[in-house]
Length: 357
Image (cartoon, rainbow, N blue to C red):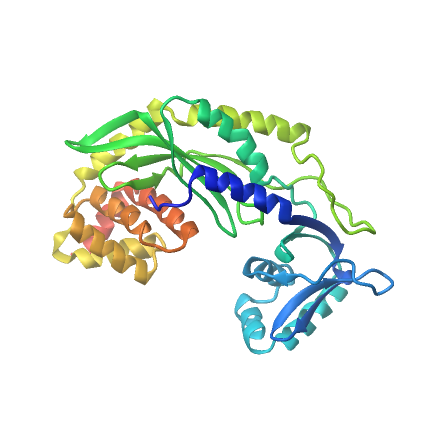
C-alpha cells in the first residue's frame, strides 16, 4: 500500500483547506475566461460590469470540466490551452454566452478547482471525516495505515489487526477499509473493504462490495451576491446517509466477506501461469485491465522478484507496483485492479494463458 500522510496531518490539512474554500453559483453569461500574462483566469462580472470575485486561477480538473461542459474535445482544448490561450478564451466565452447555464464553481485559495452542475451536492471531506473518524477510532484493533488528500480525492485506509488469515504458511493478510470522497466531481463517497498483505505491505481494494453516495442534490440558484454561503450540508436525507456510512463502516470489516476474499487468494495460488511467455501473460493482462505500458514493465519486474508465477503472484505484483507509482490516485486504482485480476473468471485466465502459449 502506498504510504501517505498520518491521520493527524490529514486532519490538520482538511481543516486548513476548509478555511480556504469558497463556492459560487454563477450564470455562465457572467463568466469570462481571460488571459493575463501567460496564464488564463476565470473572471466573474456583475450586470454593471464590475468584478464579482477576485480573478480565479484554474487547475487542470476545472479546465477539463469546462471543456466537457462545452463539449470541446479534450485534445483540442489542451492544444489551445498550451499553444493559443487567446483562442481558447474566445471559444469558451462564446459558448458561455450562446449556451447559458447555471454552474457551481468550487474554489480554494483563489483557484477554481471544479466547474460543476448546479445540482451538485456538496459532501465535503470535513463532513465525511467527522462522520467516520469517531467510529473508526472506537473500533478495537483498527490501525490507520495510509491517509492522503490529493487534488481530486480524500483517502482513509484502515487495517483491522484483529481480523486476519493465512493464505499460505507465513503469508498473512488482514482485513481493512478504504473510505474515499471527491469534492470536485470525480467520484462519489465510497466505502470499500480492503485486504492488507503483511509480507510486503500490499493493499488490495475489494471493488465488488461498496457503499456509495452520489453528489447529486437540489438545484442551487444563482444569486446576486454570487457566493454560495456555507449552509448545513448534511440535511435530512444526508443525515440518514451519515448514519448509513457509520453502519457500513462498522459492518464492512465482515468476517464472511473477508473469508471469501481469502479463499479467492488461496484458489489463485493454484492457478498457474503459462511460463512459456511470462512477459506475454503480463502484457495481455495489462491490456485487459487497462494497465499502462510503463506500469506493465514495473508489474513484470515485481512478478519476477516475487517468484510466484500464479494468478495470486500476478495480482500481488500489481498491488506491489502500486507502491512505486508517484500519483496516489493511480496507486489506489492499481490496488483495485489487483483485486480485479485476482477475481477474474477462470475462462478469462485460461484464454490469456492460451494466447501466451
